[in-house]
Image (cartoon, rainbow, N blue to C red; front, side, top):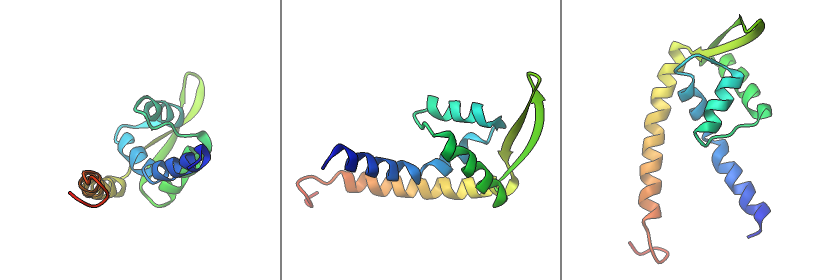
Length: 115
């Protein structure tokens, strides 16, 4: 496997986790830059070109709400979970726990199939 192939698989794996990470991080209201920074500090760096379209998509699905406010003499768009977003976050978190438990069990396998 080449480095490019590994990188493609790594990005594919992370891509599915980003919406859950964003929803979880937005339990506390933040604007885009602070959200991006908080995610990066926790090991989930997300490009602006990925984050902002995702925020718009989550908001269009009713999972986020946002409002413009001035901070440091600049207008900033603050995002937070809607009540529907809170409900979906709870469901996705439960699904994440199921998936990670399954993967942890699968990863325990040794010698390609024997447990």
